[in-house]
Length: 401
Image (cartoon, rainbow, N blue to C red; front, side, top):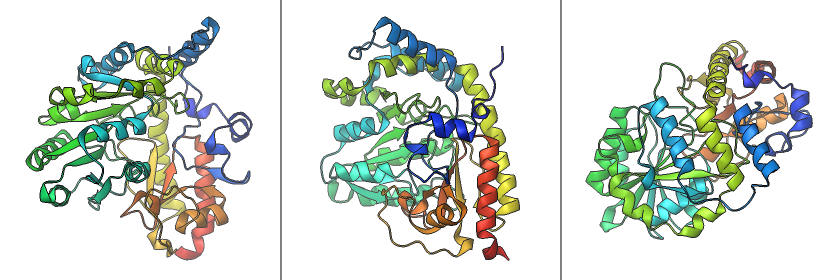
């Protein structure tokens, strides 16, 4: 049995008529939205069936505190990554970013520093600051990889004067699609141990890794025993509206996770947990079809950028469905913006929304290194991708003439 490409089942008209979530309702009707990380996919049948059957049973109460979710993730992790997480060291949380904040509360205090590799997912800035923690940036290299020398310095600065600090690792990395290697993650763990920095890993994009590459869970590497991780089926199977995630602890962080207040788990949805369990247990064929479609899309973006936007930089991602486009050659000024402020109204993003009628995420929201960039969501049909990049090329053509 084969599964058809989930990204090629819906037309633009279908999406505009059927989708009531944020992606298709922020921009005017004449703008193609390729910004927020929602997929334009049909859902995996096992997920649909799990939710429908739960509704038919009236199984819509409070989330159970058992280990069914963790067991489903563990089975998936063994099959896909050759790693068996310790399910007894796990806890259900409402979603990944709520889980991130709760893990940071366990290992830092107000006023402490949190190191991030910028450019990075904008809510890292917003959520950390809302907790009265301070951001310390450690920029990626020009090749979008972790700069270990820079990270060493950032850890030193973050822990100066005996302060506690954490490192919020994005793995795979959003927005660049970088997949961190085992060697890189082991080096991170060694630096964290040397500086007594606690690692919290956002691994929400872990299922979205392309053929020829392998995701390495942070908790699986040497030195990852003191780490904390957040995982969810939400990005892989397009379940952002079904809120649930798992916090996982390495063996030396189990006591930290045990201090997580019980009420945190009450914010997760019982129906969402059933959907996520179905995704991990029975959604593998659908995920494979999605990844095959996304693989074709990332190559299509490379072709379209080279043809229509020859001055724009694009490094093909190893994971995620996100394309990070370097538009500095266009010469469009980026006004100052607060990192973490999710906006489409500055710099190249504003230009493409206004002149090309294509909605993208502004790079300035991703912190240092985001200026002059935009993030494009490739999880859509090839017809929509082609139309969007052709529009962008026409709008930008004077800059390359």
